[in-house]
Amino acid sequence: MRPKNSRLLQISAILGSAGNSAVHVAVPWLVLETTGSSAQAGIVLGISGLSVIFTAPIIGGVIAVLGARRVSVWSDLISAVSVILFPIVNGTLGLNFLWLLLIAIFGAMFDPAGATARKSMIQRVATEEKLSLEKFNGQFEASSIVGMIAGPAGAALLIGLVGIDTTFVIITVAFILASATVRLVSIDTTAATRTQKATMSTVMHETRTGISVLWHDKPLLSLVGLYTLLGAIYMPVETIVLSRHFKDLDQPYVLGFILSSMSIGTVIGALQFHRVIAKMSPPILVMTSMTSIGAVVCAMALLPDALWFVALGLVLGLAYGPVSPLSNFLVQRRVPENLHGPVFGTQFSLSHVVTPVSSLSLGLIIESVSISLTLLLVGLLFIAVTLVIGILGPMKHLT
Image (tube, rainbow, N blue to C red; front, side, top):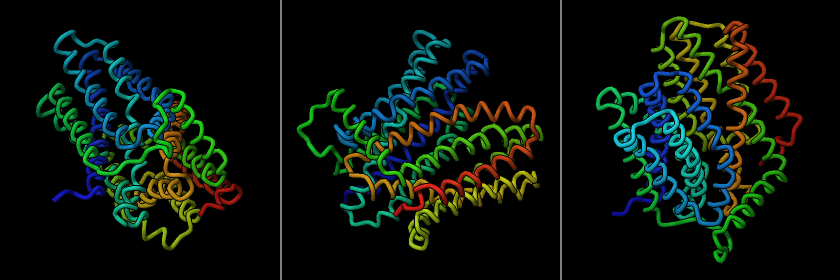
């Protein structure tokens, strides 16, 4: 019996996100193993990560012209090629810093393509199978999060068991399976006019159209702006502030438990999105989720014992869980289906523009301000930005 398209899309989301997140563990490890330099590992991650800023919106235009399924299939195959290049070059020419940087940039440029394309297929799959769009959005995002949890843990385990080169081979297989799985999905989304030729001109036209639609939808634009700002404020909390705190305590395992509890909470929250949205309007849900996250960060400023920290991580994940499904759902309701790719691509690009800047800023701030005060200020800023934009901005008109 042929699997349902919804199940195939979810499996592809798990495999694709697992592959992408595993790469973020394996590549720094390989750089450190090859060069012995933490600085060079940071440079490779930073430069390769910034490269997606320029490709994400264009990929949305490509999706609008060629179709989401085709872009997803090929992007995962290209990711597979970029990953297998690491052991191939290492075994033939020998890796150095330049090779590591070039291959990492090549792979990172296509990172958003598969995820954006799969996200662009959600509405059509739900419609064809007569699924609740709210429920399927939550299931899809939960699947992606499961992959993001499994990828880093799997990569770390594999590096210890079979070595870094074999780990890259296994990640390659994950990308190939993600491509093959989405290829089995029997529906596709393409631009309204199939007569369009796949030229750079038509891609840029679809990209500009998608950005224009988002720009003129002020309530949706305000939501995207809020998510972008809050992402910039919050992301360094996990990557810098909490890491610094538990490094000072020499308790890396506690940080691992906290991040795991956040992930578990996010999966549960995403799966409950369809129930939450039935009881709350989108603006109320956004403000409730975001102010709750801010309150949790403020509570973390008390620097409680490990068990309380883990519990706060679970609550934070539960609050964040409905965020991505809600964003998908609102785009699906307010934007023509053929423009989902450009809009999702623009969102992805915006989130990656501000995160490196905020990480650098918070990294410098924490050198002169205590961890407790930093967390308190971040939490209060989180709440203030949410309330100002939610109450005074056009986001309150979201439906």
